[in-house]
Length: 111
Image (tube, rainbow, N blue to C red; front, side, top):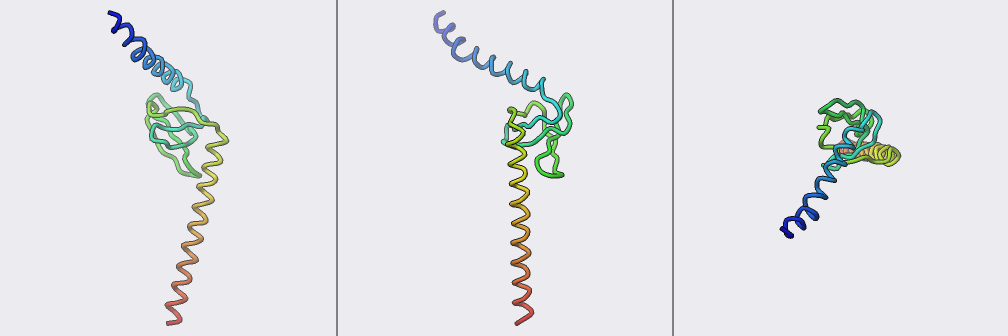
């Protein structure tokens, strides 16, 4: 009997509490919330229904995820900052690739 009480107190009760908190979080989600999914994707909610949430993960990039797979809220500033840094690094990568291509083209013309 004592083992059953200890098992319930240390294993079952905390899990039920976490599940209730997660359900409360999911019920309170709204458009514009900055969230992180269980797989670690950061984004802002663009639209949300009973089962699906559409997240903007970068400028003009939207993905659909199951509402139940949203792990938690993030600060809107952190998500915006991360999206901007990814956008700027993508532009740098594209500029570097075009510079490398130009150099190869110049070598080919001179040969």
